Amino acid sequence: MFYTADSGDVMPAPNWDGGYGLGWLYNYDSTASGPAAFNHRAGLLWPNLRDPKIYICPSDNVQMWHWSNHDQATVQRQQQLSTYAMNGAVAGYAAVISPPLKISAFRSDDCAFLGD
Image (cartoon, rainbow, N blue to C red; front, side, top):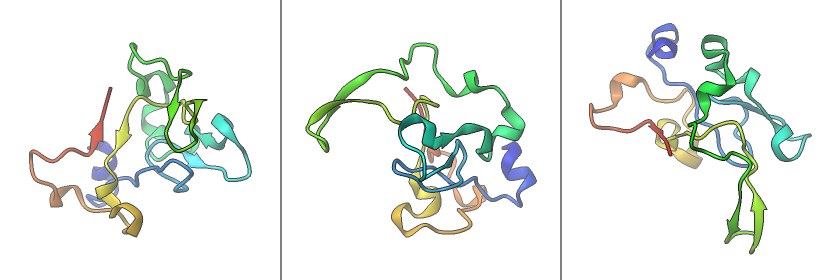
């Protein structure tokens, strides 16, 4: 709410695996690889939150390994900054609506952020 209040009712942009550039959680650096590609101090919410612990549920293991159907292998989680994800509908998924939707466009039962 603090972000939209300061941004003309506009939601922060979501982030996408593989990079969406600047979003709520991080700015993606395509010249880096693995966890180093995700700069949380450049994320849109960082200036207000300023504590990396706030992005992680205490019960989450951000460095866990899991099976990837895409890679057909056991891989480590790339984005290790957050337990939470933002609903891509805010920016039209792959269509990338810019700027994202205004918060007033959402119904009271819509979900913008998802957690563990």
